[in-house]
Image 1: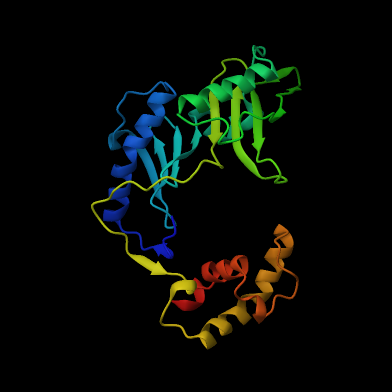
Image 2 (image 1 turned 180 degrees about the horizontal axis):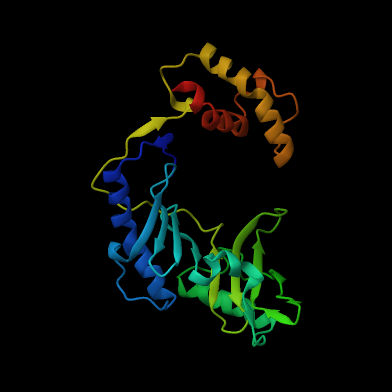
Length: 256
């Protein structure tokens, strides 16, 4: 969803978003048959971090489970054990593995299908990269980390999943490649603070002045991330979509 800026967050708007997305959280939990009292309500929310870039945010329940709503759907899920720092990723230890890598992959696919997604749409029908849990100091780690990449895109993931090798339970899911869906209806309209791309009160000279201030930082960021922007970014590249969006985000501190 292109808001053409950032949301000016208020308590009233944050509460409206939380109420609007809770049915999605509840539906997600029901489809995965999570051990939670359903339907979920705001009384079961421990914390909510609304997004200023989209109608959504991160919901943390009182049991510690976390759900991130983005692009009209639950995009990220992390169970309570996965969110605890000392048990993150592979740190959960078990007596022994009951699932082999192929079984862990099928368990992840079963969870994805249970949510109503088509495996082909997410490229989850293809062979994934699987990082099997290891051992250390006589302890068996639990979690398989599974990654599905988009074909023909190097290092461009579509799905990340983490499956407990003892229970087969889903510890973590990130549906990176899920197609965007419409946002939920809200009783309030968001107040949008326009980005530089959409501000009418700044003339071209002012935008170029901001560009000159940000060019060195853009150079550094582009090099670190390997973005398709040449070194020594100049004014002729101002219309480049990546550079332009970078300016739009970073220039907010100069525009206030």
